[in-house]
Every structure is written in C-alpha cells, then in structure tokens.
Length: 123
Image (cartoon, rainbow, N blue to C red; front, side, top):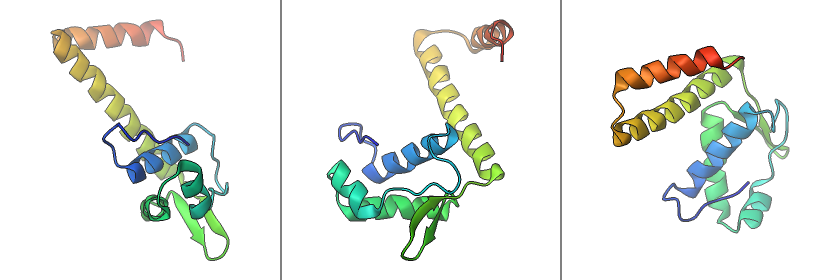
C-alpha cells in the first residue's frame, strides 16, 4: 500500500480506496486478513489512529469484518462489489467527461467515440 502525501486526499481515504480496489481486482479475497493497524501504520509511517479510522470506514461499509483479538478480514458480499465497481467506473467516466469538456470535444461526439470503442473492443 502506498500513500501520496501531496495528493490532497486524506490518508485514511487513500487507505479505504486502496483496500476497495485491491478487493475488486482480486489482490484481497473474502476472508483475507488485513495488516494489523499498528503494523500498517508503521509501514506507512503514519499515525495508527489514521489506519483505525480507515478500517472503521471499511467496516461501516461492510467491506471488512473485525474479529476481537483476531484482526480485520475482507468480507465482501456480491451486492457490495457490484456497487463498488459501478462507483469506480462512474468516477473514471466522470474524469473522461471532464477531460473531453476541457478539450472542447462535444458530448455527442464523445458518446460516438465511446460507442465505437465498445464495438472495436472485445470482452
């Protein structure tokens, strides 16, 4: 896990996002144990409270499950992964739309480009 102190994104949110992405792309699977709070804090050279805050957010979103004395484990349900995928893709598409707007590409032309790419790209 890597943290970008210059990104302007709070560190705990970077941790949350990286755990989600890792889970979506298979780096973490259901039942995998996350690094203990203190261990991850030492590795990233940040305050343990920051890691604890990230883990609490992940727990609140039902992405991890805490076991007293046992640690924190990935606990994804299909409905969570579907929602996370859609949220991630929406963010990426919003970035593309913003870039197209900045370049002066009309939205109808952007839609045509996207449709053409979908036809050309095989799943």
